[in-house]
Image (cartoon, rainbow, N blue to C red; front, side, top):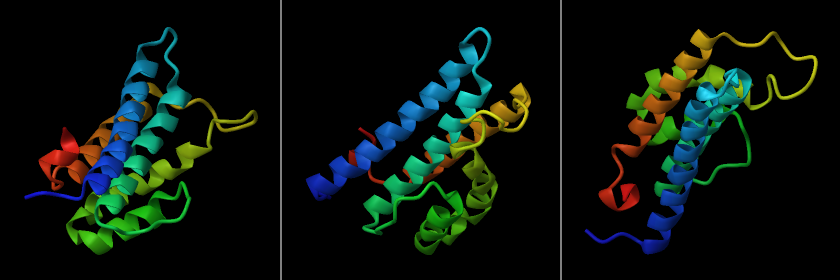
Length: 137
């Protein structure tokens, strides 16, 4: 089946950016000392961009926001089976701004970061899996 090349290209770009954020989250953990706060930011960005890529593929417009709850609700309108994963991902929203400025909460634990990274990977893979191969190449 042939797909609109512009739609394939735009969707691929969102997932490519999401994959780069996931890679950055992983790379931040290899730094000495690990960049835990930055890793969490990239985990949130991975999920946000994967959700937006999923919405792009389904021709569902979205507004400019970091709210994973808002974007996730739109994803659920397309695939309600994603609800457990979206519910788990919503708390990652805070990492779009938490730790980004002075006076923020205490540094996160490595365990917190590892859990967020694993969740970001799960969301990325779950949103990409039902899409055609043309998007994944």
